[in-house]
Length: 54
Image (tube, rainbow, N blue to C red; front, side):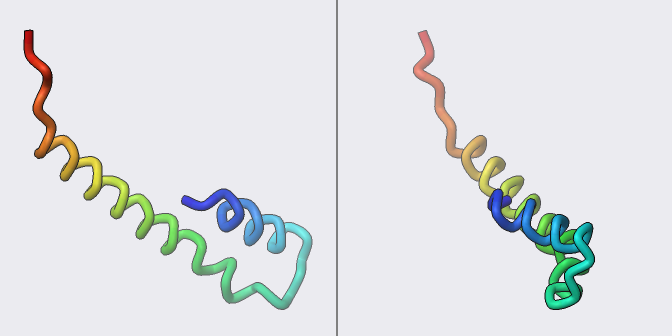
């Protein structure tokens, strides 16, 4: 997950800024999407991995 996204919206919420209230509610969904993408890419890499074998 991008560092700026992970830190900006929670801090806006803690500081009670009203302009980004809707976006702060979307943080868990974006985090879940990035997690799913990371798992999919990991599994793709593991499926195509071949060790050097000695």
